[in-house]
Image 1 (tube, one colour):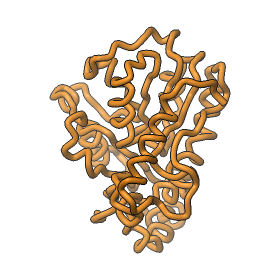
Image 2 (cartoon, helix red, strand yellow):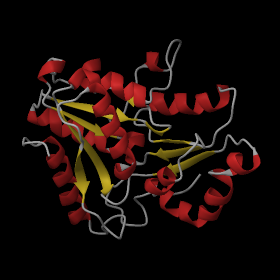
Image 3 (tube, rainbow, N blue to C red):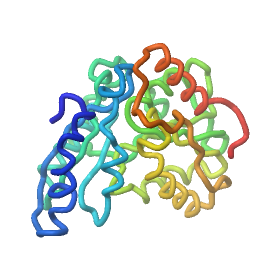
Length: 266
């Protein structure tokens, strides 16, 4: 477990040499769980990013699991799944910071009990009645915003404040193995909507370069009107994050607005 996920780069040799490829090279399974705090909260470039993109770049041959859970129940179930599976895979988990006490980051009791399980993809809270907004019918949804982790709650609060009942928020909880069939099932409901991928990380970091071709495959599979997802997030950057709180706030507001604002899809 890292104090901040940013410090995982000190163990890069271990990730490269042993954890990501140990089973492929030496047929040695591992159920190691790596908890790497990740999230952009204005704390600067050394306290924002667990370098998600580096772990996703090493994904192949079902070598490990990379996830970013946004609810207490899903976090519980992904850890429980590690114990109950009949095989072992390393789990690289982007863990929350501000979500630990976030008033919107909650789960119902039944989400932990009999019949519940880990969800690779999570639906919009408005569908579960955890929002005052009533969404339009699937056929009338204008945009689906795909995201993962903490930024979902920023999008949810702003979407509801604006009363955008034709924008659906869909969370990707597990990046790898990519839940292609689950995405086909969920996005198949919104074939006429434009698709946006929203992330907090700069464009050259985070999950964008990993999810883009996967989402494009899903859109082709369902015969979607718009064949490619659009990016909404920070510009490419050498540094993971700004050290100025005011700039962080402006960037965060801009990416949320870009994801939700009306306009023709690319």
